Image (cartoon, rainbow, N blue to C red):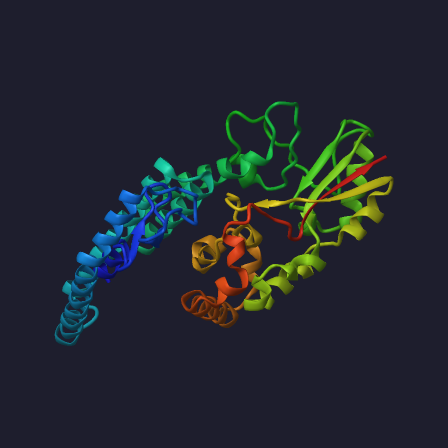
Length: 358
């Protein structure tokens, strides 16, 4: 297991690591498909040469060591028993090594990753220490995780104007960045403000979580003199995304949670405009359509954690999705159908901005 972790950090034969985003790409690639990093002819030639001369041997060596390790470990289990001090100590050593490896990955995210990357990798560290039953380090990294995730989500809130935030969750209020004003403890269905108190109001990916949609929208309209803006998705357009072919269950879960733009418009009244929101190829958020041109990312369970719809999908459907997408990426079938998306600057999917003016 320890060697397996080390092996995962090696470059596979015929591939190289992008120095900018650390993703694995073909050695012959002139441009990184993940971040757009360009390579000179000399860099390409060097990568191709390295991939042919040594990496296959290294990978083979790792595999041999893994086999030897597993055989020895199996023999040790038979001789000493799974609960012997020797086995228990080595298992703990492995868990500690996993935690240290997770910290190294977190430091890389801090150095060159996005805020979302920091949030995800801090969560991996806290989970590793939880598995290792290290309570002190778990508590420490859980605080780091909460702070990083709060910072990652704070970008939705503009800082160049006066904003009053409403947040019913005490834990989320506690995680707000120090440079932002404190959030009001309230719910959309009962806003503690006078009629026409605000010039404008906005709800970002939240209406599907309200207990009473009609009441919440009515309250937004009551306290707002000007436009009410809703950022959400149109459930009837979710199946435009190629993910529908591989996991219709997650698309159905999403569609069942979100109210339609028609429903929102009817509830808010006035003059309503609905705009499609183009999703950029390098979108830093973690919702499913953000990976329209980076399908490999959706094979990462940690990347999928950022999208709550996956929590409504059972393990069988998720495993089927991983198997089918992995197969099509390996065979080239995905690229035959959708390869153009890898370089398409934006994707117009289900993401919508609804603007309701009185």
